[in-house]
Length: 236
Length: 291
Ligand SMILES: Nc1ncnc2c1ncn2[C@@H]1O[C@H](COP(=O)(O)OP(=O)(O)O)[C@@H](O)[C@H]1O
Ligand SMILES: [Mg+2]
Image 1 (cartoon, chains in turn orange, yellow):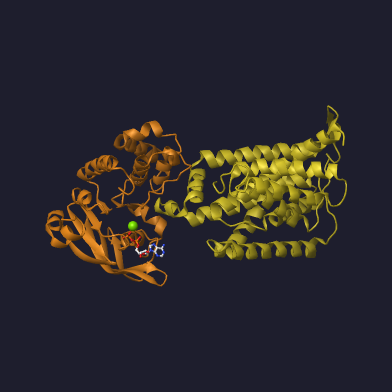
Image 2 (cartoon, chains in turn green, cyan):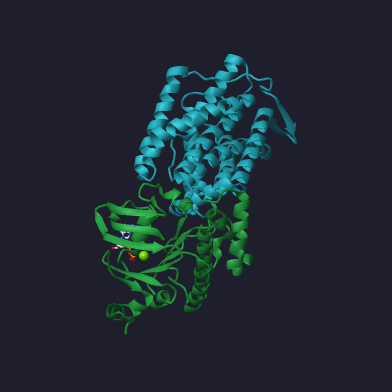
């Protein structure tokens, strides 16, 4: 079943058009990656899906609902959340407060407290930091807070924008281990990543975006074998 | 100047400063959450003070009780101001925001002049002129009551922001409005509620101030300048800074007018303000804009 569908989307900033005619689909339970070089428009695509930028053409629907017509702050309530590039944790809120803010779409306090327990299970290393200001945490821990905050609302689809950015390789490995577990337990994931081998190791399908347009798509295996991907992204 | 005079000035200033602290916290909160520096803040306070005067003169209601009646009226004014003016300049340049809120300030001042004239107004209470002495220092009873009420409200406001769900969302909006949207927070309505709430809250200092001071249509601009100074001094949007800054400005004001007993004395505050800003350009606590 198609959960997220993007069709012929054109989008950008003011007069600067970044995306031209982008289409993609994510089915429920699937992990899909968007790969592409710096400046290709990956973050712009996620911002457009999240309603932060209005597309100038095309349609975006989630679970059969029109996202373009939906106010941006309602989109998480519909079950679609984003962890933006550079994490954007709330630095002077505590870790616990960051997570509770992520639980805004949940129906009430009890549901938020219960969701909090689930996040401590997923990221046990955050438990001792629960009352620390999130801004004082290491980059890897902040990324966990950002992901935990997104998971708090029990979303049906999570979009991650370059979670490995600025993290040490060992921390990236740890983080992807957690992501793998989440995907295995049924989380639907749309992952933007510049680290192509790492991303292809996690997802089942991927799109390659260059200059604001999708130039290639296929299963992770197909893309690993593709000459274009091998030359441009895997350096083989 | 004798030590006794200085002590008297510090105490009187501190009492008044407690009320300034509440006025400034409300302004700082609006700035922190909306990134709009409201030059009409003192004029909204003045509108509340006129409300207190009207209720007192027409119905004999005492200024503290009148707070409860003035607050909802100020809330309505806040709603109108938000939808007619503030909403349009959210995210606009600071110059545009200053023009709009300065325009509002002049509009309130002119309305007050038109309706109430330029005469000094005050309220009558059973506490008029009541005072007592502690260790040689004269403490006005209404001044002390105003101070205590303001401090309690400052504490309650702080508790609300730090310990409630709405307060948590409010802080998220202040720190990163885009991320707050991505968390599902209706940022625009949070901003609206904060503006309306902070405007309504001005009923408290309005009642406290009217219990012992006089009112003319230029009071608004004085309180605007004063609270803007406090908020800049405290570090824009920093609530703790606004609180401490309010107390300090109250003391500096009282001490300078005791030191230099002439009409230029209020000017000294601006000098002190300038020097303090030179020393700590990011505010007392050096953090700048963080609610
Ligand atoms: N806020 C913005 N305002 C104007 N242009 C932007 C903004 N953000 C990104 N861009 C431009 O849009 C293009 C795509 O950027 P982005 O979507 O961030 O790429 P990616 O995430 O793939 O690295 C780039 O040319 C970038 O300069
Ligand atoms: Mg990007």
